[in-house]
Length: 499
Image (cartoon, rainbow, N blue to C red; front, top):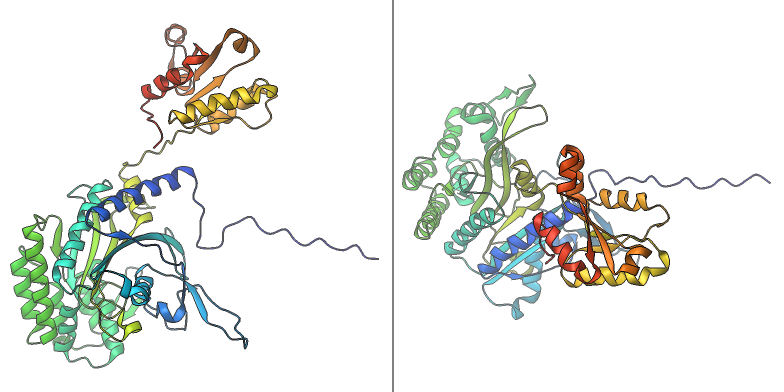
C-alpha cells in the first residue's frame, strides 16, 4: 500500500496587502484614538460602534474608480433557502454604515444626531508601499442638520484634533471647497456627457501634482508625464477648459477675494452661486471662532474621491517635509478628509436627510508623528520577577501582585527557570526596566535584590570601574520596601504608573 502523503503545511505569512501590529504600535494607536475621542466628546459627539459587515446593497457603490459589481470591497454571498442569499461585505468606510444605522434607528435617535466612530475598514484594492487593504479610520458626523454651522464645526474640531495629537499650527492646513461650486463650473462649461464630466473631475484632482499648465494640457489633447509616456487628454476646447482653470486658480490672499473669484468662475450657474454662498458662511463662522486662514482656508483645488459628497468638502494636509525612500524631500500630504453628503440616508428612507462629517486616517497620522519624532520609539516592558526556586512560585506571584496593585506593570518569568542567565536575557528582550531577584539566601534574610536594567545597560557602555562602584545598578532592599524601591527606580527613568 502506497504511503499516504502528508498535506502541505500552510505558509506562515500575512495575505497580500495586510500586516500585523505589535506591542508599541498597538499602544500608540490606542493612545491616539483616546486623544481623538477626547476632542470629539468635548464637541458633544457620542460614540457608535456599528457592524463591520453590511449588505452590499446597504453599502452602495461609492468607491472611486470601480466599474465591476462589488469591486473594491471584500464581498461574499450567503447561502439562502434556495441557494442564493444576500451579498455581504466588509465595510469600506464608516460613513456608509452610519447612513444605514440612522435610517434604521432614526425614531430612537435625537435630531441632529452627532456620533463618532473608530475602527478598521477594508478595501479590496491593489496594495502598494504604505497602502494596505485594512486600515483604521476615526470619524465624526452630524446627521440631520443642513446648517453650514455643522460644517464649520467639523472643520474647527479637525483643527483641534490635529493639535491635540501633536501636530502644531504651521504644520497642517485644512482646505475647504464645495462640490456645488464645482458642479456650477461644469454646468457653465455645457458638459452633458457623464464620462467627460468624470474625466474633468479626475483632472482637477491632479492640480497639486501637475499645476495649471499640466491641467490645461490634460483638459485638452493630453501631455507627456515625467516618465515620457503620453497621457490622453479630455479633449476640451480652450474655451471649454477656461472655467475650470479660472476655478482652480481662484484662491487669493483673503477669503473674500477667493469668494469673488469663485463667483466669477461659476458665471450665472445657480448651483455654483449657492455653493459660493455656503463657503462664505463657513468662512465667517470659522473667523468668529478664531480659526483663521493659517489653519483653515478656502481652496478650490480640493476634490474628494468618494462619490456621495453633495456640498462642502474638506481635507487636512500636513505641510511639513519628509524624505522619501530615495532621499528626496516631499510634503507629507493628506491625513483626513470629509464633507457634506445630503443624499446618503435618502437611499434608505426616500427622504433627504442632511449630513456632514470627517474621517481621519489614523495610521497615516501615526506615521506623520513618527516622521517628526513625536512618538517614543523605545517602549519599556514590565518589571520581571525572576524565579530562583520553582517551589516558591507563590512567593513570586505575591511580589508581582503587590507591584501590579501599585500600578506598576509586572510579570513573573514563566519559562524554564533552570538557567538564570536566560531569565535576564528574556528581561532584556522585553526591554524591562527592572528585574527582581530573591533566592533562598535572600528569602532567609528577608530581602530582595533589585536590578536596574536601564542603568546597568548605560554603565556597561560608558562607565569606569569607579562609576560602577558609585552608581551600582543592583541594590538590596528589605522585602517590605519592594514596591517603594522599584517605584523610585522607575521614577528616576521617567516611567510613570500604568493608567
